[in-house]
Image (tube, rainbow, N blue to C red; front, side, top):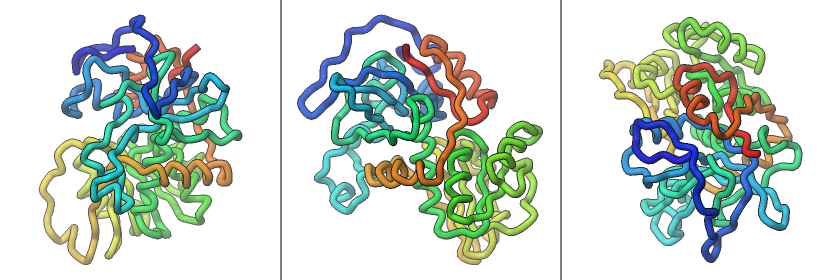
Length: 315
C-alpha cells in the first residue's frame, strides 16, 4: 500500500521486492500494526516523508532462515553524534524512521537494518506482537519518563494506553483513564483493563494525580492534565504530533509541575519492554484487517472506531 501524496488514499500496487544492502535483512511481512503516526504521515501533519512511501512501523516478519523479527519506528542512527554517544539515539539528528524515511510494513516484504530489529517474544503470535513495537514501546518510554507515580492518568485510551495500563497495574500503580467525551465503550474498556476510574477527558479525576500521560493528539488536554496533577506532578506528551496547546495561566505550571515530550525510542527501550511484556503479561486487544483495506483501517482510527489496536494481516 503506497502513499504518493499527502492527503491522498494509499494505492494497492505491485512493486519490486526490495533488495537488502549490507547490514540489512529482508523480511517477509506477516503483520503490521496501524499507528496514529501513520495517520499523521498520510494526512500531511508530519513534514517531508519520503515519497512514494510504504507506511507502517510496527512490523512483524521472518527472514529466509525462519527467524522472526520486529521492525520498529527507529530504523537507523549514525552512532557518532553527541546524542548517540550519550545514550540518546532517539534524538539523533540523522536518524531515519521506518514508514517515514524508509519504506515500512504495509507490504509483503520489507528491508531493515538488522541492528535495529527486535526479536519477538515467543509468547505472542504475529498479530498480537505488532502493537508492542510502537504502541507498547512509546507507552513504556512515556511511563518511565513519568517518574514513579502512585496515581497515573492516561488521556486518550487507544492502542498505547491499553498496553500501558497493564504495565502500570503490574507495577502496583493506580490508574485513571480519560476518554473522548461520550465514548462510553472506551470508558468500559479502560475499566476492564484495570483503571479504577474512567471518564470524559473534560472532567477531573476523583483524586489528584501524580503524573499524566497524554496519548491523544489534542493540545487542549495539556492544561487539563496540569489541572489534574498535584504539586510536583509530571505531564508527559507522548505523541509525535499534537494540535496547538492553548495559552494557560502560569499558576497551572507553578508548584514545580513539569511538562515534557517523548521523542521516538531507543533500542534499549525495545529490549527492556519486550522482556517485560510476557512477565506482566501484556495482552494486546487487536482487530485484524487485510492489508488491502489499509485505508479503511486508517479512517476508522481517525474517527475513533478502533478499540485497542488495528493490525494489518499480510497473507
